[in-house]
Every structure is written in C-alpha cells, then in structure tokens.
Image 1: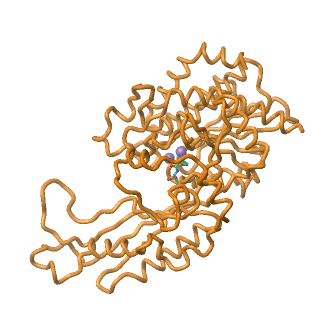
Image 2: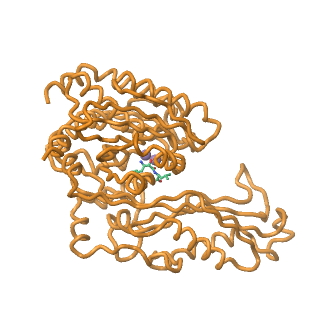
Length: 457
Ligand code: BES
Ligand code: MN
Ligand code: MN
C-alpha cells in the first residue's frame, strides 16, 4: 500500500537509528553480569512500544529476566495477532574474532554487524515499526498483542510460567514470530517447523585430584580421554545416534513429503565454500535439507578439562566435562530423550571413572499447519513484497516456547522470519541485512491486512 511505503520512506533513517540504539545494550541473558543490561533493554523496549502506539505496556518481572507486554485492541470482534520476540542475545564470545565490537553496531556493505542484529532484535523490532506504520496511517486492521521476552536464549523457563498465569491477557487467534531465516532474498521461504531440544551436561571424574602426567600417566585413566571415547561412541559409522530408543518416536516422512522438501533450492558447492569445509557430514541415507530439518541430531557444544591456558602444562586432569545437546523432531519427547541419554551415558562409563549427567533445559518440536489462514496470509504478504511465493522449509533451530503456545494457549504459530542462515547467529560478526530489515517492515502490514480479511470469510 502506498501510504505504508511513503511513511516508511520518510522515517527509514529513524527506524534504523532506533534499532542501533537497542543493539548497543548488551542484553546477554546467560551471563548474570549483564542482569542490569537486560533490565535496561526491557525498559527501552517498553518505551518504544509506547511511542509506537501500544496500550497497557508493562515490564513484567519474572524469577529471571523480565517480559515486555503491550497491546492495541481496536475492536474485540476483530481477530488478534500475538507477536512474540526476544530482546535477549547470546554471549558474544569469542570476542577476539569480531571485526568490530559486538555491542557497537556498524554498517558495512549493506549489513548491520552486532550481536542480536538478526537474532532477534532486528527481527522483533520490524514488528514494532510495522505497527507504528499502521497506527500512523490509520490502517491497523486487527488487534495486536506484543510479548517480547528476555530468556529465549536460555530456554524460556519463566515465560512458560507467564503463559500459564496470563491465559486471558494473551488470548489471540494466532502467534506471529520473526526469529527464523529465509533461503535467500531471491528465494523467500517460510519455516514450517522448528526442532525440539534436549540440553545436557556431562562430567567425568577420574583421580581425586590433578596428577603429574609423567608420574601417574599410563597407570590411571585420563578422564579427558575417556570422555572423548564416550562421546565418540554416541554416533556409529553411519552417523546414526547410538542411544538405545533414541529414534523410536521419530515421525517418518513418506517419499512424497521427502521429495517435496528436497525441492527447495540447495547449492551444495556454495554451502561448503561458505563454511570452508571440503566435505559435508551427516546421517547416512538423508540429504542435507533432511539432516537439518526432519532428522534428530546430537552435538557437542563445548568440551573442557585440564590445562587450556597459554603454553603447556603436563597434567592428568581429575575431571573433564562437556555440554551436549540433541535436536529433536516430531514426536520425540525432550524429557524422555534426556532420560534415555542419561541412562545410556551412565551405562557406557568404564569402571575407571565416575560420571555425572545433568539435564539443562529442553523443548518440544513444532510443525506449522500450512492450511491455516495465517500461513496463507504470510505467504501472500511475502508474495506482495518479494514478488514470489515463499517456499516452505523445515527450520533446524528451536524456539521452545512455540510448542507451549499451542499447549497452554491453544495457538498456532507462524514463523515469518527475514534473516539468512549466513547471518552468523550465535557466532562472531552476527549481521542483519538492511534490506532484510526494511523488507520485513514492509511485509508485516500485509500480513495483518490479509489475515484480517481472510479471517472474516
Ligand atoms: N532464533 C533462534 C532459533 C532459530 C534460528 C530457528 C534460525 C530457526 C532458524 C533462537 O534464538 C535460538 O537460537 N534458539 C536456541 C534454543 C534455545 C533454547 C537456546 C537454539 O535453537 O539453539
Ligand atoms: Mn532467536
Ligand atoms: Mn538464538
């Protein structure tokens, strides 16, 4: 619509400046040293929602980082869209690999470089600006509720409680989220699923103290070696996961569904080149699209033990440990998978060490019903601004709260993300394209318009 375009063109620079200001706040949820920053960020989000025209805007405290809520109810008879996003970000380390400060956003070659630029400040803020556009041009066609949380990157445990306690306030017809990626700007896509997650930590203990590796090495098991052997045994020669029962609940896709998934454009040579790898890796019998979309996986996120400082130190460490996560697909249950992992890991430990296995957080997988009116509205909105219908793709990442939106609030979620897989999420030099940001702001009002229209029928 021309009025939207005109308003956006007029205010484009301010829209960018406001995002940059949010990106300067180091709202790292995992690190308690940033607790003041997450509060500051929540207050800033509150202020922006008020300025954009939302009512009942509130910073809601939780046992962890606060949740920001706001709404605009124009007519109770109209449909309501619940917009979810997160203002918290991943830790920025390793810091020395950033070309510029993670919280000092710079614009280079059409991209905004900063932690949280794509995940998720740049993406949720598009919704705040799209809302401002609709408010200022008197074109808001439905009710909107905003819920922007501060603990997505650490598992959203307190948001789960908030959902249970605020069912009335959060009543809506659909949840809309921009926190996923598109294939490319030329090949727009919509994620039709998210994987679940089970996150574990393991600790292997050998001798009761660190030992001189010359005096004792060779006579006492080295827990770092044992840990590596145990971890290596979690995949077999075909890269299947060896935990007994792990695949029992996995929903298999039929040949037609698999063929449809593999229709999505995928350039293996470009993929390898971008990542700097000579060969890809993965579960035998599945394509890369399937390996990252419809199959469960197990990854070591971090591993440590012994001396890792400068120079060398000869030591046989007393302990070694690792953080291990599993991505889950329908119909795997993250609590059951966590238990299977724990039992298996304890069972494969040799008698020369002791192991401790603890579960961190987890979440269930989710699949979007593509016959939902809101999915059609999102497809048409993308068609309107990209000139092409989006390709449905199963996303590999997780947003654990999405399954709870369905369970607690009975709401389906539409994942209309505008990022790119190459945006360096959770990695140094995270970026978000200016074009992605502006195109997202342009597309979102169409979603609301089409959703309101289609809901009438
Ligand atoms: N925005 C991501 C999830 C995502 C990214 C989905 C790209 C699809 C494509 C989200 O912020 C995230 O990183 N989630 C975590 C899970 C959380 C429990 C730590 C993840 O997927 O690792
Ligand atoms: Mn995110
Ligand atoms: Mn993330």
